Image 1 (cartoon, rainbow over the protein chains, first blue to last red):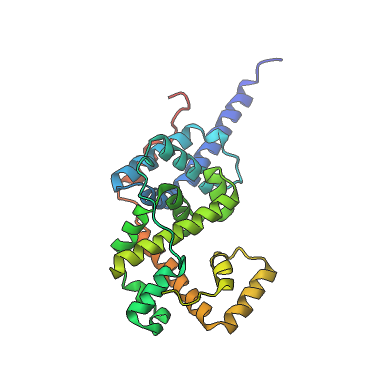
Image 2 (tube, rainbow over the protein chains, first blue to last red):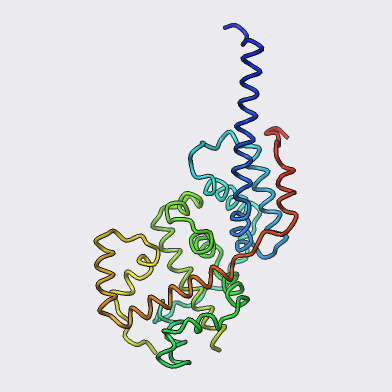
Amino acid sequence: MSEPEPATEARRIAAEARDRARFEDEALALADQVYRVARRLVGSREEAEDLVQETYARAFRSWRSFTPGTNMRAWLLRILTNLNVDRGRRIQRSPQTQPLEEGDYYLANKVASAAGEEALEQEQVVERMSQDSIVNALAEIQPQFREVVVLVDIGDFTYADAAQILDVPIGTVMSRLHRGRRALKQKLAEDALT
Amino acid sequence: MTRDPCDKCEEILQEFLDRTLTNEEWAEAESHLVGCDYCRRRYRFEETLRRYVKTSAVERMPAGLMDKLNELRGLDATA
């Protein structure tokens, strides 16, 4: 094999630089959405900023391993959730909450019994909960359940994307999501109505 | 106290809200909702709650983070 022509080599380098810049543009355009998930996975804004920066540093270094045309948001979030695990941020497991007989009905029923039957119809029932109480309740859910709730309910990822990001089967995503949402409602009910 | 929750609703409500039901299941769920007052109210409650969780939990990216991310452009794989 002969050495590539200098002109051919120059074109190749230029094409690669363009691909890379395009990749970086596309990734940076998603930064707001990546941050949104990061912020709810970790305890503070500073940690979230660090996590997002680490994610982008790793993404930019390994940009060649991204397949153009596939879901970049999911690809970035996979890096992020792996880094989050690496950094040992899931060490603190919240105390196991007792499953309630009412299950998913717990919050709705408590609200209804506290505020009257018709309250279930009212959007104000939910709006009476403060923004802080939602954020706090979310932070108190066990990390493995919170992860899925954050990805699906806040990050708008599909079950399939979440499964890919977390490297678990879809069935696991669904059961964790179910348990996570249930835990969230239980915490909200405890917070709002005790 | 539990008010005899509707089992059918329990099964399908979350997936109905997630839009992951098949067309057939969707139609079944819809026709159930039309006839079941309790489930309809539960549906509205859940929908509102989800929307509220989402709007409450979303926090904008801090000013300055984008600049820091932009500085990472061109990072070398060996660096």
